Image (cartoon, rainbow, N blue to C red; front, side, top):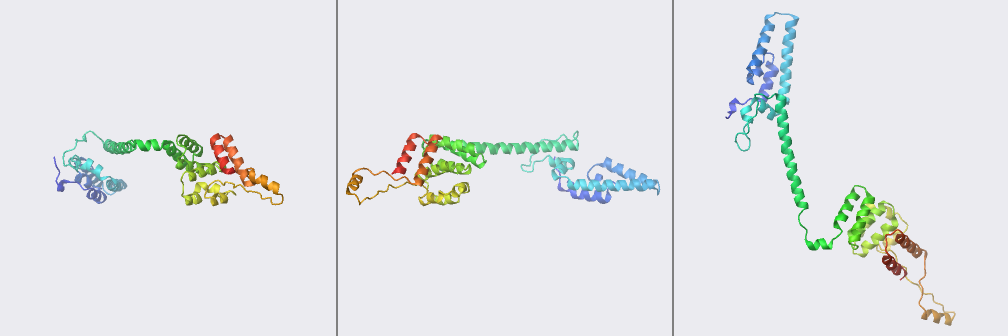
Length: 314
């Protein structure tokens, strides 16, 4: 069943008829509600036949007010809802394919039930769209990664989890995730840099310096990022940062200094034959103490501690 364009009910025309002719129910006749239209007309004629009186004026005023209310209701009504209610054959035809859609049981449904059924249909369509998008995202996440890349980046999952915690301001959980990544891959440059940022935010300068040193030693060369990264602001206000920067963001290594004694040739001969012990300066002592504290806290293993100590002592 189809509806010609001339038979279609227009929402705007119905609203105009309700505004100007609602007192006699013109909009009801236009919308095909002849019973309601006759009722409007009957009460209008009844009010006129009663003669001029306050009761007659009240009835006519109420009829005019109801017409204005109908006009506002029609204008605010959604076009789809208007078609379902007043252009039922048109609403049953699919606008995309032109085939008849499943018929609505409009004979026994109220306006509220029709609106509820339409909302339910819209929600079902939105839910299907969400499920499709979720399947697409899951398909992208589950795409197989090359086996070679998996072997090379063993701690990637832990590192990405740490980045997620860091962005959520859960710095202690981020540090734990980065530590797991470094346990699986101690040469992970990104994990070293990220955990240094987390330690800096937590105001643990010693550990932040150590991991920055390891990141640079393993190839990290974006020094501008160290100078400007917001998370490293705490490190940049430390007194030791200028020396750290001058040393290309590496922990300083004290160079052994020889003491020349030209007054006593015997002493000079002994010093030339015997190995010269390095002079321990205040800065070197501070760095050795920092390494010792890191070893006590379990951050450095014995092998790492001995390696760093030998490097500091030359």
